[in-house]
Length: 337
Ligand SMILES: NC(=O)c1ccc[n+]([C@@H]2O[C@H](COP(=O)([O-])OP(=O)(O)OC[C@H]3O[C@@H](n4cnc5c(N)ncnc54)[C@H](O)[C@@H]3O)[C@@H](O)[C@H]2O)c1
Image (cartoon, rainbow, N blue to C red; front, side, top):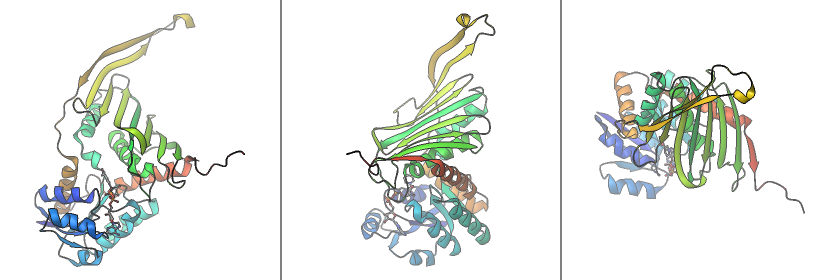
């Protein structure tokens, strides 16, 4: 039996309390939050879980592992404290808010011989695994580009901008699908309410294989959209994660240039415009699969599928994007007159 403590019981932490309770040979025995209201919320739903505002009390307790679901800027110091106290750690995404922090976390995990895992939840999503199978099975042909839109109204965060919050998902998904890290990035963002925290961003990543990826993330959009399109030479696929059914659609669409032509007027293309076909997949709750992977990695003393190195690679890509991002700050712009 692996005893787990949850640190951070805001919006996301309580979901970890639930899934670890259902994940198999594990029990959530402690929960910690600075906010007593959030602890009351946990105590009301899970009276068997002991609660504390003091992280030292949780770390001194008889637990084997800690899940950290606090704001991103606190991930590194809290995870390092937990590993130093002998606990295995699952940290919510993003692993950290800088590569230097992420390196320190990996070094602590190695020195203390603890498992360090990052909550890249979408890697445990059956649609993402099916996309990977389609790509690697050659179904899409040569990969041309990916386009992802992850937008909705809110939830504005204070300590990280929209790229660290939302694009962290897409960068992790792309890494899993393509098996490579970006070689170049261009980025534009905009801040409308807090000049320090862009809430809209367009990121373009180029990969060594030649694949291009365009990411659009926003906390300021009237619609909740979670859509990724992948275009290949043979087929195209669209994943719509908020669709009620038919979330994955494969299209036999494409374009081929005629093999020869005499002048520009004879430039010919042949379009294939076949119908979209639903691609079925067996859905299981990704967060529960993530919890099971963490427990299995602890038991087998092996690296988890989304270990510290995956977290570091995503942090590196986001840090590179932040470094080159041109941010339009609406509030900060001087106005004529
Ligand atoms: N994997 C996903 O799909 C997913 C989804 C949502 C959020 N998240 C991640 O989960 C984390 C938490 O997000 P959230 O939306 O729940 O935020 P939140 O603000 O709702 O909750 C954070 C909680 O942490 C508590 N806290 C802050 N500092 C603390 C400390 N030092 N010790 C103990 N408690 C502390 C706060 O009081 C608050 O209750 C973030 O890193 C976020 O990126 C991941």
